[in-house]
Image (cartoon, rainbow, N blue to C red; front, side, top):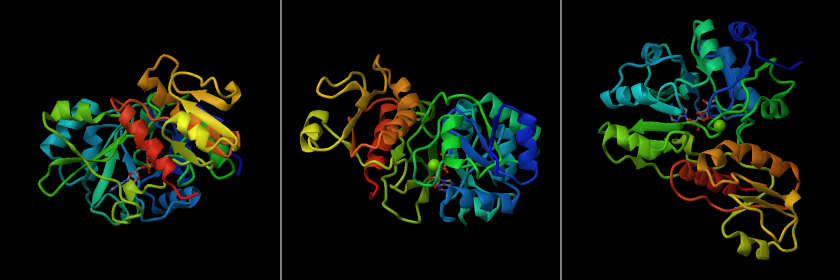
Length: 323
Ligand code: TXA
Ligand code: MG
């Protein structure tokens, strides 16, 4: 299949209408989109991504109003969060109604739903009369794509169209928020909206669920995510460089080059030490680092504040995959 990259929203809409997959830009990462009301198209997502069918998909809609057509009700706190953060990188788990296929929720009675904050994505959603199901547009387990080129590298030949919306401005996937039995909020995945921001709006502490390794009941928390092919180790760069002194090393530094290693084997996430910029650059740099075919990638954790917490979560998950 020939894969075209372009900016034609009507063309993207036509492909979706016909049951085809289209990669779409969002503010977080690129999504692999299908008509969420077409089960065959949704099945094609799992196939192209090589994603197990027990791992559910996020439903993308253009507004809170539209979201209401797919859930039984919206708790007050969810309403508040949606009004504050949508369109934006917050996904909420809400009780689905019969309009949502079990293929999307992997049998769960909760659907993950969000309004993406990207002009092309929103215009596309306004051109079609169905919601979009979309996981990140990478092969299952690999680093998420933050540019049309990233998607092309992974999926060309498998999808007909990539809607090019430039580089994703957040660069990390959305924060996923669910509710416990008492309808108290819980973070299922750290992401583009910080926990502090959510706590400020709700005026309460919000619990972060712990990771579980390969627990099929919590597919959103599979650890083997976001991983490069080259093994990644995180910790003190000095110590790690000593440990791997006989190997070909590539460094991923936060702000400065390490004088002990050639610059061409190093990357900087943000020269000015800006955590948001580091988030935006992270996945692209992980891909570039991976392409150098080193023996190991070494990275240091970022300050544990703001998006630094989500960045560190991604680095830790990338490190924990069995390679
Ligand atoms: O920023 C994002 O969220 C991007 C863009 C494209 O919107 N999407 C994304 O999708 O990251 P994906 O499929 O790569 O990650 C969504 C996560 C998965 O780990 C999935 O298990 C979890 O959300 N998830 C989806 N629906 C769920 C549900 N009903 N219950 C629990 N977890 C769910
Ligand atoms: Mg993903």
